[in-house]
Length: 114
Image 1 (cartoon, rainbow, N blue to C red):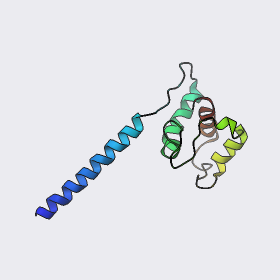
Image 2 (spheres, helix red, strand yellow):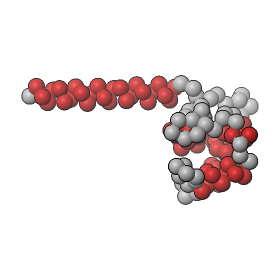
Image 3 (cartoon, rainbow, N blue to C red):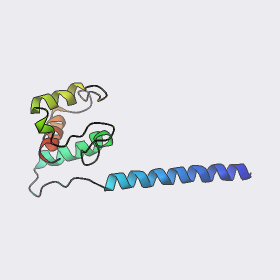
């Protein structure tokens, strides 16, 4: 019985630590949209948080994936769109999971806001 209590305590501690880590990552560093953001920029922000932030960081600064800050200085609009659609290296393709509008919105968001 004592072993079972220790097992449950250990899992509870692990779950609590993971929750704290996820909450702190989600709350820190998030980039604010400009006050005059239009619907496409807002949509890009939503797509980025849902599909990109896990690898590229909530602020686009990188993590598992590369930094997307100042991406416009490294890739043209079309090159970046191609990477999102087709994938590259460890980045998966999003052509079957994001609409053209979502891709346009997230590319614009990364180029104009991050």
